[in-house]
Image (cartoon, rainbow, N blue to C red; front, side, top):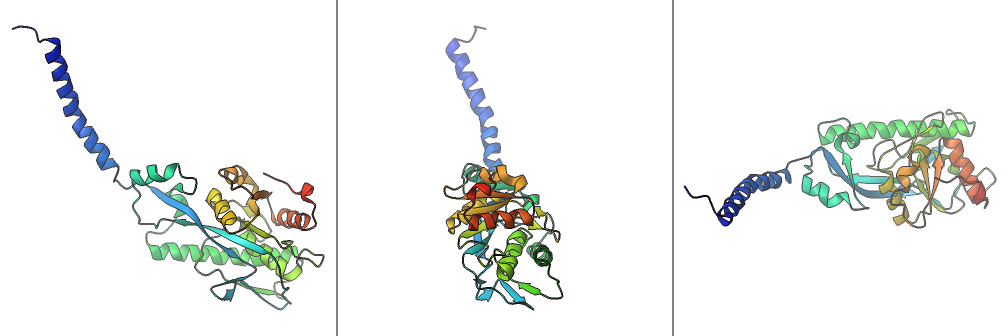
Length: 270
């Protein structure tokens, strides 16, 4: 039998490669639509805790006179795809390189709950705990008794614990300002994020790079961030937004007082 010519051999190899490529392409096409364990997130709303939300004051005090305040203290949020929304490879590739999007592990956004109702219940519970801790931390910092002052906090449908630091600062500003007759904000628009413990410890949260974008979009020039998340906050940091790292409530109040009095050289940076 005569040996195949080089042209014939190349032709057979081409056909073989073409045939083999068909299932590979098919698998890749299928993979593009297979749900993956990720959640897609983007910058969410911000709320001024010194103002109103939905026509209702975010912070209402009883048992003590509430100061008229200037400036803003804005809590920040992210918006994420729901717990049952399928995220595919195509979605991940589309959002991976966008600075205004984040691809996050599903369980980091939804650690508990198999339904929308369970997730909402969990987030509402965490928000209530955060609000209680914020009240305790603020009154402890000001050396006031919980029996003397009560705070009612409301942030609409926002859930989770990450607004704790801003709630605490809002209560302090409404009760005591900067401690010298002025506003803790110095009249500025200040945003931030961080959990709060009753003893004033500030804890880390998720989605910080997206929250800095939401803050700058809504006019903030200062962003308070848990110190452990400085590097995250510096990723894609919007121009005109200064980061101030905090480990506890005392750090935050001290930095804001220094800022209000013009002592910018005494304020730490990430």
